[in-house]
Figure 1: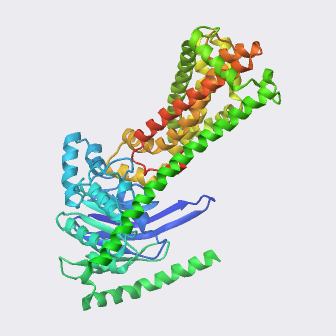
Figure 2: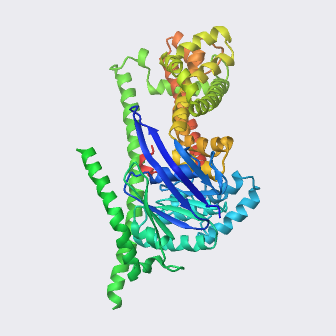
Length: 267
Length: 286
């Protein structure tokens, strides 16, 4: 079986404005199976977002190979959806126009794109808000728009960069449940980046732990909690606590390293 | 049980009504104060001129200016009917405004999108911008003659730089996440420009249009001063040659009125084009 995503020995370096070289990722290996929901946790600044940039084709790796759906990545590949951390819906488009953007860019007729957009807007529970502009929506609703905007293209790979980190706790677990619902109805593989281990375990089939920067994969854990899951309640299961403790031991060291570095950097 | 509810409900209604009343009263007092400012300034000027504190010959007086304006409206100016003068200047202004804005937006977007080009052209554009640009009016008066073209060119040059710098900056300030999102969603280079870069730069560009219409008017009038046969600027110029201060002021009043009308039109255009922006607090608008 070809993996959905495969990164082999990937290193990513950036030039800093002062002319130095900053290594964000170092010799990173990662494999995601088709249809798998992978969560990636790691301390601040470990290169989690950089990893998504490489998979999406927005950025090329400095060394190593990135393959998506069995093909080497060379520019932005088809079949990728990306939900950004900050708001990336277009503020000058209405909800309907935002969701219809993908199909239109991919050559669908205006009518067809709008029809499909209406369908997706109702699937994410925003019927009646088609003509609103993003500034008229709450943070949670804007995330729903972003989700519909990505999912309407039928991505086989969905990349999510801390999508719910700006939401309040209640809205967040609602959105997590909806995401699981939408994902299980698709056959997409998901790479979900978060700094929240609880979120990672409750959503993922597998949790990757990254080291402090330059980031590389430290370990990965298969999460054998049954599906369908209710994110708001799954954390009360005793087995959840066991998994959490096991992964946390791994993650804690990296968080401490990163914290110490930040302190030194600030001093 | 029902009493406390009634008590709770009534103050809310009263409060809303009182707020509305306060807002209305404030609106009325603002208008009255505005009127008072006009009466004090114009009245003081008139009194000063009549009592001899202000020299009428150099500074004229509001009643003379009004008389001149009325005379122009009724009998026409020395250059012909007043409407023709206003229309001439308006044509020059709008022409320069349109030409300068279009060139400014197009070149601003092109240079904003192309880093090499902007690095190469940067110093030249800054140098050109540093010249007091009204002097190009003299050049255009020689090369394009005394008809409308030299005025449009002068106005366009003044407008161009303001719009250009705003469009350029607007393109540069585009949110990188929005660009990345559009690319992932499948936008090609053309779509990226028309659907992300230009809308995003639009609020910068429109903000510059407010300033640049005023500059277009400056360009048209300066162009007329360098030599013309009609227009409000020419009207002012000939009034100056006759030591007619009232005529100069009357021309200024006409220009002010034209600028105010244009400002209102641009604000209406702005509201239409950037409906997607959260409305600004009305108090900040003048």
